[in-house]
Length: 340
Image (cartoon, rainbow, N blue to C red; front, side, top):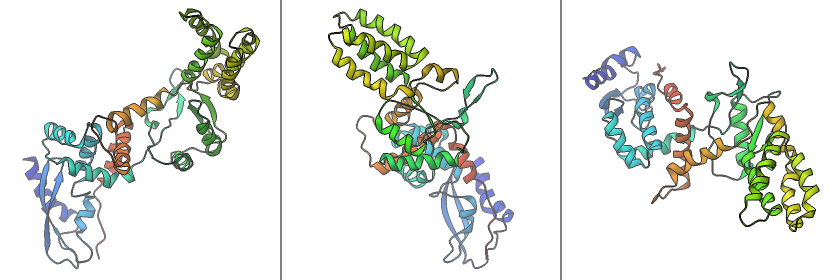
């Protein structure tokens, strides 16, 4: 019943509301099948030679689907394990019967317009403590070298409101290429080495200093030094191992491992960072690699073209960020067109 009502509305009432009952220069009417959130309807609309069908543009049709239906297809394709399983989920939950291949084509057509970022902003919560703005969390997915990715990230961030005077914090592991990128793209940003990665390197130092077979002494040393690292930063840890490392039979290896902390000392002022409310762990980003990418694009038996994978992952990121529906609401605004 709803589908019959929608069909009558699209073919009769809506053209009258938009002033498209008679379109200047049109040569008759043409029919096409249109996928809607209620099912498929036959749309009869005026055709203008060389100009197509104005009603299609007014409705914002995408690959023969209304924006509402296209949104449902994108979610089904991105949040299922495969396009075919997305087809099954869509049919079971909404009654729509759309082949997996059609979902894939739609995703590849619309995805290049839908990009998100990998950062978030913080504000003060009601208790006065820094809190993440959930609405600002996003994912930026790209397959490219670090220089081009850095440019893309900068454009996205400035587009979202990054400006002079704002505190920008980058938390990542200790890979040198990341910090080279940050120095170039966000030279004034506060840089923080992920505390978990720092802890892994600290554990290696403790094992070198306490090489017992059972590892208990190393674990005890690690627990104490980890607390010191978190409270006071890398400076206290460097002093400790520079003072006590030379007495160890692994003195040379300890000194070499300690260079990781020397190079990143300014990025490991964890006590100061925590007092300011900065995030000292990159778990959210690493978790995103699993939830956004691996759980969709790294499953058994899957084969991807890079462009196809990128198109899918962009949309998956937008769905997880909670901004996918906003995009389709804007696309779904029916608009009156001036037709000559």
